[in-house]
Length: 597
Image 1 (cartoon, helix red, strand yellow):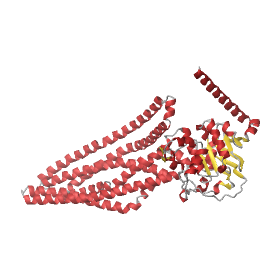
Image 2 (tube, rainbow, N blue to C red):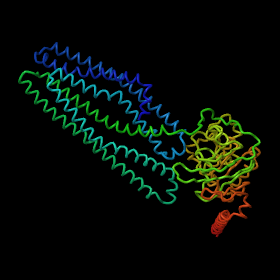
Image 3 (cartoon, one colour):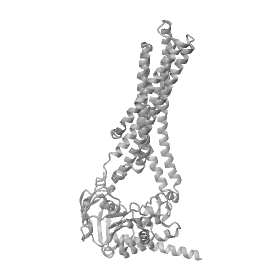
Image 4 (tube, helix red, strand yellow):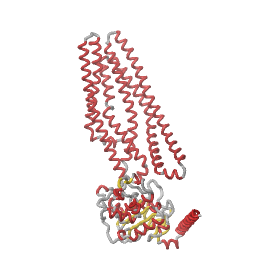
């Protein structure tokens, strides 16, 4: 919570100013019951209309001054809370962009979304209340005790008893509520994650007829949250009646004492009215304080979650703000190898075992590489390592003749580009989405990249062309179209190394073959290093070299023909895929013949 509190330092002046005006408002409010008491004792009892009017105008003037003070306090609270929330949200968003992949994965997208929205909103409310209402309760309580002492000191202990009973009730209830609130926030993260999952996979859910099952999972999680919120609501509902009962009993006791004091001449009727007003003010102040306690239990939990995110270690050498434009790196040319792994040891965070152990291979300059292997063999992990999304524990990785740790973040990202399997297009025009992070890109260059990526045909068919509006995530494009557009976007960045992470999964065999052929024959990319991560033998065989992985181990490295002759695992994969393609072709022929008949 310290990190969140320290961010209030620039607003100390406004906070103090707001609390000064709140203090002024409280003082003016405390004077009114005394004036009303005087009005009753001196004006109404003596039927002095001039005195009654005089005290009425004084009360009206105090009310107007109190309103002005409240407005100033409210303005300061609004400025501070909104500015604080905006800056905190901007800082957290910037920090999320710089977080390490392991931390993002550990917290989860849904949790980060909740922290960025509802948690910060809770802190904004807490800051506003810190100026508007938090100082009001102690000011009023202390002021009421002092004013009661002026009227009759014997009543002070009754008011103190009311405060003590209220504090005891609050401590008792909040000890029950705080763990429930923390649990509800975690469950809300899970609910948001479930919604994201369902919306992302809604087509698959419908295709496999799992709507009812997935709906039941959502309803069950919702019911769990509802049960927790019911408990929180139950304890919240107990607070008001308990405090009202206690304070009303004390009110009855004060009236009983007042009757006795009036009989012995120590109290007048106006004083009793003032005491009842002060008791009502105390009840109102403590009720507000009760709501603040409920709010600040949430503020405490939210600030802990925000602090956890803000204090995560940033990715090393993060310098993207220096420049978003591709630039020449200090690579010594000519270089002998495009990629070289030397005795690399790597394990994912919190994993007790190495995924890659003493892992070595060399990709000579000017050669293309395909990485193939069973699911979970570590193919995509190599891509993460090349982009330093995860750091290796030991060993060395050379990229274009330069050790990977010698690259700055900007240099590395301008040297190597990864096209992920799950393609994502940002909203805006198609031109803006393709040229994201780059300037001075001409339409001719975009069309060249689209031609090579086999995307030009369907873009030209649309009358809007490059001005076509892209919806969030590229939802108005098919999976194959998004994949080809993502490839075109990567080609426009003109990095020396391009990694295609199983991009062929969304492409048919003919389109994939045309893409590979266009890349090989394009003079623009003749000096580029292409690394293809794939499950398909038909795609891998077009590369100069193939790296075969099995559970993190290099079990084969060579050309397609060499592996086909000498590697048993590669032969098994080849035979199984060729058989599948043959069965697929036979089914297509049978279907076509059936339609003709």
